[in-house]
Length: 125
Image 1: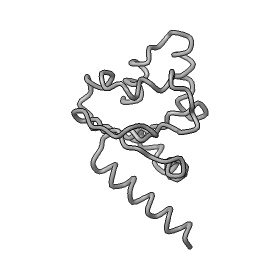
Image 2 (image 1 turned 90 degrees about the horizontal axis):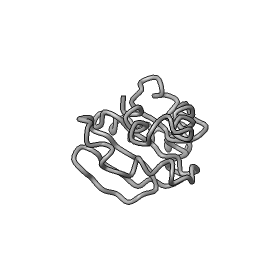
Image 3 (image 1 turned 135 degrees about the vertical axis):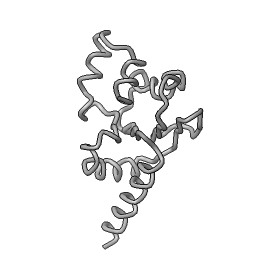
Image 4 (image 1 turned 30 degrees about the horizontal axis):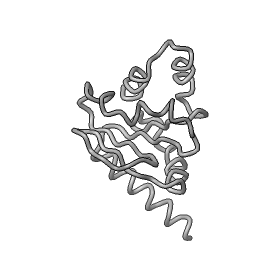
């Protein structure tokens, strides 16, 4: 029963965030590659968007314009990843992780065909 209650709380928090933000980006804490993820910590990469974006990661919390960064623990990340598959079809939640659906974009960045800023723009689309 506790597992179901925890999952329901997680679903409610994601639904609340989806009401407030146009896009949620979750940076998987298992992806320990700061070189790949640094684009999501650079507020300059979000200046051209008018979308309200929430970035969930193990970073400091801050707000710049319509972009917010919220700290999230590894266990909370796991919970959200479980819920993510319920919303994946909506294109409103994106997960930054090598093994997820955006893996091919990382390959373009690694090959130099896509800049990190272009990666952010692609995920905001």
